[in-house]
Structure formats: structure tokens, C-alpha cells
Length: 514
Ligand code: SF4
Image (tube, rainbow, N blue to C red; front, side, top):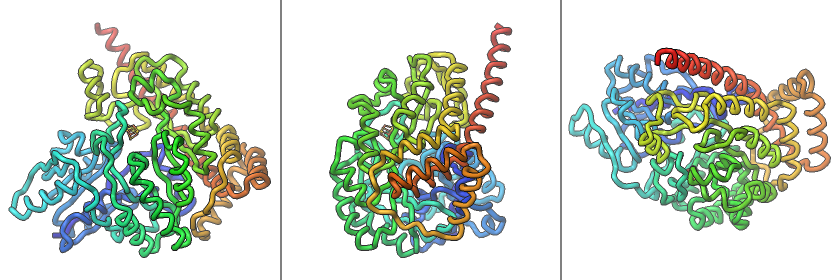
């Protein structure tokens, strides 16, 4: 069987970093870990070809070659995912879909022949059996969550490694918390399941032997969901990293209770973890309680951010506006919090109800869901009726995003942040290629010579060189991100304003008609 694996396009987003990636000659931030895991679970004697549509087009030769097409993606990729199902069906190819989007919205992917839902360790063997029985369609679901200790090493060999800025690896699935808006606990459950340390080290060995050096993103939605097991992993990883002379640096996502565990933070720094994404969401305690993010209400958030920073881990954080009962000025309160903690990379979006989450079900009962099946991403209006006027929320969102990524205040925030960041123990092996040198020249030219940021750029660079020179490479990476954020804040401004105008026009027409 010849299987064509297709990874759909992402829209431009906070994380897409097109301009920054172009500086270093990369085409995408992360590879499709789900699809290469699928290829590892399916029969070894089948043949596989992977096309990441974020990297290249799908050619007629690819379609001709395929006997089965497998497509997987997240809800933000739905537009291209649906388009690729159509493209495959137009060519009479059997199509199987799976992954988070298909699992939470199976009614939207009915055009595919096979729906391989939930986790592939259980449902992919069902697909294989159905194909072997000659069945032309089917829906395969799992009632249980599989152990991930048997999950094979993903087929990293199918990737065009040089197209990606980071490699992806997964240690655990699931999260013990219960945030109302979160689809991770719907998809993967609240009991974190971890791989064994030996299993994860085998995956690292594999990408090391393929020649990968540099950044590795631990894709776990909450890396510290099972602290006991993560410490066991880190103790072995520390030895592995020493033996290999620190070929990788790691980034990941974690819950804020990381700040309470000094041993864990120290182990992470020892293993060359650099950045940690925290879902802070909002400094408004009422909203945190309402959305059941109780773990963020136990200790002052800014103190937790400072503890993690001083330990030597760079904090990136997510913020959300639009919770029920939110008081006006939420956007400003978020901006003040970000400025106070000086977090350079603050992801900010309006609340969306993701299918099948607790929030989705509550809003459905209350009759407040809008536009089912519409695209949901960081530049779309909220998909439900909020408790305060949507115009106010959207305007605060646009204004706050604009302020956060005003180039000079962004660079100043980065300076304040890197002045307090604990000194990194290991630098991580990123190759100094001609492309990296050319990227540095471009940043120096754009931000240090012709940009309005020139005085800020040089003053910050010199200050860091004098006071905390080991963090200068990180500061320059944050400067490179500014190339993206400068463009992305325009996209947020335009897209939200356009949708807001359409919404207001539709509301006027509705009120005239009634
Ligand atoms: S902590 Fe993060 S992953 Fe866990 S339930 Fe909350 S939002 Fe989801």
C-alpha cells in the first residue's frame, strides 16, 4: 500500500513566524509529529510519503503515486484540510482523516472515506483491518485512552529536516487540570500518560543520528502534568545530554505550578530547557475562577513568573480576553501585567469555544453559540455571544495587541526581562550557518540602522553585553521575532476590524428588520 500523508496549511497566526523563519531559511516552525507517528504505527511493509503543505505543494505525481491518502490536522488547519479531502476525492483516491480536528468535529469531515478518530494507537489498527477486509469506508473510535509506552519512534526519516526550525517530540499526553475552554483534556484526558525515559531517549537518539542539532519542542500540552515521571525522565536526560555534549535545547509548555518546584526547574535548566509557555490567561481572578483555572489563583501570578525566570527558564505566556462576567478594561489589565512581568512573547487572543469542550457545552445549553463550523483562529471574532458587548472586547483586543507589539516597548520589555533572567547553563548547539549570519545582518540593519528602534536596539544590546552577556543570543532571537510581530499586529488590526464592521452592519440590518 502506498500512503500519501498530507499535513494541511496553517493560516497566519501568532506562531506562524513567516518573516522570522525566512531570515534563517526555514519554511515552518515545527514538523507534523502526529503524521510521522501515524506512519510508525501503520504496517512497516506499506510505503509512505509525507507532504507538509506548509513546506511545499502537492504535485500530480504525489497524487498519482498514492493508493491511500491520510490527512490529519488541528481546527486552525480546517480550511486546507477540507480542501485536501476534496482534492483527493476528485482524483478518486480513498481518504482517511484523523487528528484533533476530525476527532472533535467528525460531522465536518464526512467527505472522507475513513474517519480514524481519537488516538491512533487504538484506531489505526482498526483502519488496517477494515482495509484488509476490503471495506471502502468506516468510522473508528476508541472508548479508552491508550498507554503511550508502546508508541513506536515516530518516522522522523520522512521529514525534510532542513525545512524546520525545531524538531518535535512528545513525552506525555493529557493534563490533570480542568480549564473550561480547553480541548486537550477532552482529547487526551485528565490523567497524564507518559512514555518511559528509555523510550524518549530512543527518539532523541534517532533524531540525533539523523543529524538534527538545535531546538527541540517538547509538544506536551502540560509537560509537568505528571511531575514524578517527568523528574525520572529529566534525571536520565541530563546524563544523555552531558554525554552528547548538549546537542539540543528544549522548549515546552507547562502549568504555572512549575514555579513551586525548584528541583524540577533546576533539572529542566540542567537539561538545557530554554523556554516555557505558560497559560496565564488573565490577571483577573474572577475570570480565572469562572473558567476553572484554579491553579492560577493559588499564588500571585507575577511572583510565579519571576521565580521561573530567575531559575533560568524564559517564560512565554498566553492571555485571553472575553471571559463571562469580565469587567471593561481587561485588555489594559493584561498589558499592565505583561509590562510588569516584562514577558517579551505574550500570545493574546479572544476567547473561542472549541468544539466539545466544557465551555462549548455550557454555551450550547445557554443558546449562546454562534456560527458553528466557522473558522476559529486568533484573527476571527468570538464564536459565541459574550456577556459584555463583543465590540468592546474586540476593540480592547486590537488596542492591547497593538500596544504589546509596539516595537520600542517590545524591545524595552525584552531588555528588562533578560536583565532578570537566570544565566543559562548550556548554550545549545545551533549551527552558525551563513544563513544565521545573514539573518543577524538583516536584523542589525532593519532594527539597528533604518528602523525607528535604532537607539533602543543598540542601547539594549550594549546593556546586555555589559550586564548579562550570556543571554544576548536569546535577546537577538526575540529581536528576530519582532520581524513577525510587526506584520502580525497589522493582520490582527485589519482582520478584526473588518469582521467587526461586518458584524455591526449585520446587527443594524437585524434591528431595522425587527
Ligand atoms: S492547564 Fe493547559 S492543558 Fe491543562 S487543562 Fe488547563 S489549558 Fe488545558
